[in-house]
Length: 167
Image 1 (cartoon, helix red, strand yellow):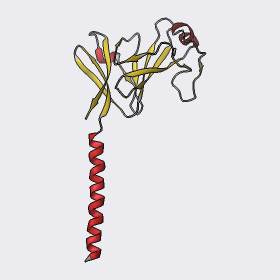
Image 2 (spheres, helix red, strand yellow):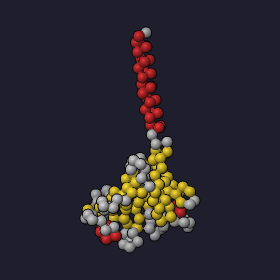
Image 3 (cartoon, rainbow, N blue to C red):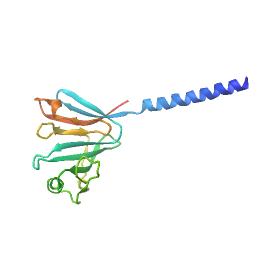
Image 4 (tube, rainbow, N blue to C red):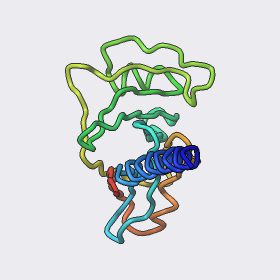
């Protein structure tokens, strides 16, 4: 009888622990990177980490560049790295104070550099033009790249990127 009672108590403790873990996970908010315009929400991508990037075709150099962001605890996001296929985009267009370095072998771009530390770039929301000329694309770890210009079609090409938390 004591052995049965001990097994029942052990099972109840395990069950209580599992319920507590499940309740704790259920209460933690999930972050999403949303894309919206005047027509409403066009896309929503889950953020399983705290980073995302926006790549685009630079209109002056006609080459791909990328701005990489880190989500802050308050839901804003901060520019933490700029990447490009050509050095001129980083050195001339962005005018960064540090010298760009070659990107790693698995990077989408050829060169990377941190933004100017004297001018931090932090957004709560970001309005960008989603045109086929600029080919703006969202890169969220764990998700396929999301091309923005097909989302707007021939309507207003401006979209707003925002971080939303859902319980």
